[in-house]
Image (cartoon, rainbow, N blue to C red; front, side, top):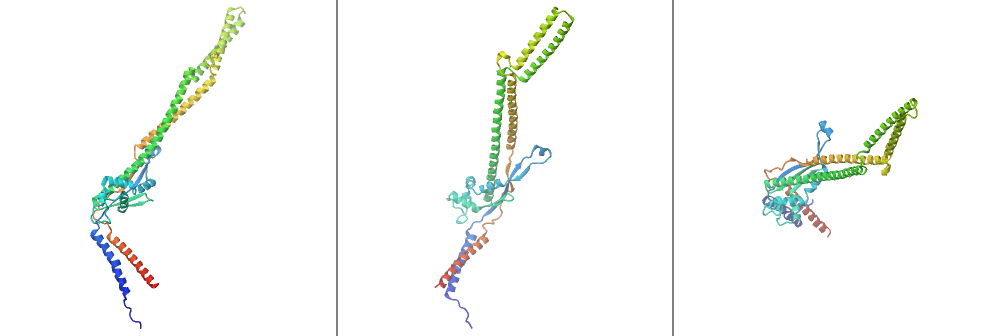
Length: 373
């Protein structure tokens, strides 16, 4: 029968390497975590970007309220902003992140080196501030760590305030753009209206006419009156011609009256054909009337455009008076009562697993090299 296996020198070497390469480092890590690593406190804040959508006047009459929804694009921007160097610099300038995170002494792993650069501070920020983003619901949850509960809450509160300011700035930019465009349209409409009114005034001054249509009606009425008088004069002449002698002075007077009325009708007709009379050499009355109608149409169009632009500008101003975007916190910055970080058992387990995997790999490599000899 085969004799029992005996431990050889290489087996003792493996056990010794296990003690020195695995157990000893694990004990060192455990000693550091429980004896040197400073306690960390967590403060949680959660929020989302909300957007107010104003309803139409008809919806207001029907009692339908405005719609409040989340804006995914603004939330994406905010998510990137929370990891930016600009935010870290602003918060550091306000509450002194370097002093907050460098409080523990003798903890080079979790404490921040107060002489570190801004890049080091941003890297430490990403370790101490965890951001969880649900892009489907548009919700952001932030967990801020510090070495005192008050510092952690202060950090979370300051982060929320800066995030709210950033969202308000985006809303202000959008409102200012809307007002600026509406103001430009209003100024253009006002200039167009002034130009149209000045053109009508110049036309009236040049032709000594307030409204050609009114003058035309007056001339037409005068012409109709003269034609009615001519008809009466002709009837009177016919009656005198049939009842008196040809040398009767009344016949001569009636004939003279007919001629005068006809001359006046002819003169009024020429006046309708030529504005200001033929001797004035002015434009034909119909052309002047057409030019005036064109100017009036331009003025009316400019007035309607100005009214529309003014209403749009007023609506843009009314929209700017309210905050269309805002940051809604559904979890306010919390104040921790106990230290939950660093998660020592989890860190110790991960460190032990990593050390054991490294040791196992080295042992396998050594044995593989020996087998090749």
